[in-house]
Image (cartoon, rainbow over all chains, first blue to last red; front, side, top):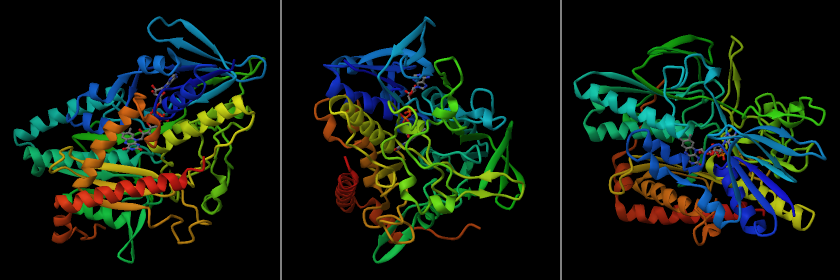
Length: 479
Length: 42
Ligand SMILES: Cc1cc2nc3c(=O)[nH]c(=O)nc-3n(C[C@H](O)[C@H](O)[C@H](O)COP(=O)(O)OP(=O)(O)OC[C@H]3O[C@@H](n4cnc5c(N)ncnc54)[C@H](O)[C@@H]3O)c2cc1C
């Protein structure tokens, strides 16, 4: 009987656990260790953050799902990984009791999502800083309360400044911040308060609509339309000001400090701000059999797990080398260790990085969205099942082949809601396969705004929660 | 720095015209499914 341990129960880890449970659960021991006993449907935290969805509608208990899928659940935070042959295990700390738990494994899936590195920008974040975040459920609830309090001030006639975007020169997840800013706009319009707010998009992207993926391009009526034009229209249409090519370096109460591509340093005042922090890998200890630190074999300097990618290529070469992107998410040193979702180390950025004259690197990190994380979770799970049953892997899917859909809603009403729908295929341009200048399939890629996007968003929320609860037919819903 | 690009009246009309949007909803779902199955190597 083989033992498989999955660290983390988010989009990647939970998807992996469902596939592992369904294929191996009855014969082998599958264990998920997660520091939370609920699954969180992260995309809907945007709605929590403006008070349009109750937090409890975005979560459900994991244990009943795992019981059904023959997966053991351990409610603990992993802290150490011991990957050396002979004695391979994960050490964790049980939530509540603080008791140490040891989980031996034959195969390990590392999928604990990002460490939200608020400390990377002095003054950033809701805990020790002055800005808000929607990257965790408690943060989204705190952002909601602050936003609703701000609305009360506006109702009394106060003019306010709202700044949404990225809080670090190397931040990612611009899509979530974009969805939040347009939802705030729409909510203020509905509340009759829009004229009381000056709203600014402040981001590290090279251009509006870049989203850390070098923008999205589609072919419409014979001409190529870029997300830059499209998103610029959205901002202009909504009276949202924007400032890109800017890396936030420090926050003080009501003041954001930034530097731009030209090396200019400036400040922006705010009454309410939601800025996405830099993401890092979870700070696990990686320990060898003699107790030595073996982090260098397992993770890159940012703490993301090294997998089967080609690391260290300069950006111009990486942009022309689709094969540099990992396909199996397997650690090259410890072949029974896999990483899924945000936890794996990408070989480099997708968008063009820029270093300004003060040596500040302004470079959006590549997003590993929910869809991408789910796909990787499935690939990793099926390969582990293959290895256990047949001795060789048969699955692979690099981000240069994956499709990703992002629906940035603007309001949640099915009648007068709206959404920008973005589909990119592939997520990472493959300039060898798609010979246009963008390296993408311009026919399947999609960029559109309309009420159908709001329907799509609503449908995704419910179908994904259905899938993640492993209800009948869950496997036919694509990740 | 901020170009005067905006959506035209016609574009805004189509964004809210429910019958057309139903069609776009179907197209979008088909596109996503086609891309998902095309990209699935496994
Ligand atoms: C507000 C917001 C909106 C978004 N909207 C979209 C969208 O519309 N579409 C889309 O595709 N993507 C979206 N994303 C991105 C998407 O949510 C992420 O890509 C996805 O959650 C990443 O999955 P993951 O499994 O790698 O990490 P996570 O979902 O973060 O899951 C990691 C899990 O590991 C657990 N964990 C952490 N540390 C430990 C530990 N030490 N031990 C055990 N367990 C641990 C965590 O509690 C968590 O359950 C959005 C992100 C945000 C923040």
